[in-house]
Structures are given as C-alpha cells and as structure tokens.
Length: 107
Image (cartoon, rainbow, N blue to C red; front, side, top):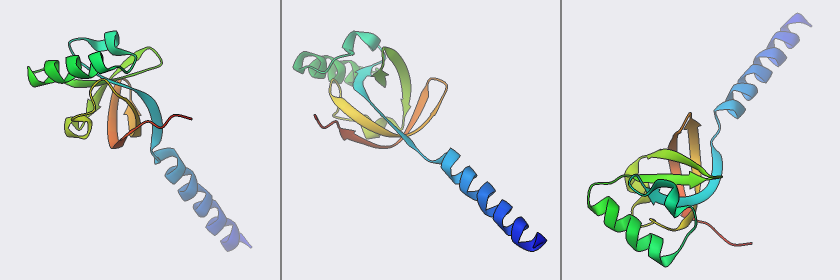
C-alpha cells in the first residue's frame, strides 16, 4: 500500500511539474522597440513602419493587452511587423521567449 502511494505521489508531482512548464499562448501585434505601443493595432501602415524601424536597427517587440514585451528569438518575428499574431512560448516578467509565432486567425 505504501509503495502504491509513493508511486501515485511521484506521478502527481511529475504531472504537475510538466503542466507548470508547458508553453502558453498570447495574441497581440508585433511592433518595434522604437514605436512600441504606438502599433497596438494591426494595419498596413504599421507593417511598413515596423519593418523600416527594425531594418534600421530596432528590435521586434510584442504588444498584448496594452503591455509591451521584449521577444526572443527575433528571427521568429521577421516579416510579421505590424501584424496580429499568436505567440506560443514562455513568459518571464516582460520577456517572451517564443516557440512559435503564427498569424492570428479571426473568429
């Protein structure tokens, strides 16, 4: 009986740890470090501006719920400036580490 309880406890701890470390998803707009929250809505003008600022040395950032997040790796956001995207990954403070970035789908 004790052995079964130990195995059950270990299984629950492992499952809890896996759930805690699993990636989450956020939807927002890809902006740049120069314009920041100015591009909180997707538009053709924002697309041109963000890509121009990034090509001039700026960094991609992510805007969601009126908050600005630094993103890594930068190459996952390339070509998505000014567009609404869904990012799957992990967040720590204001830093978002992306596992995947996809154009958001409208519902």
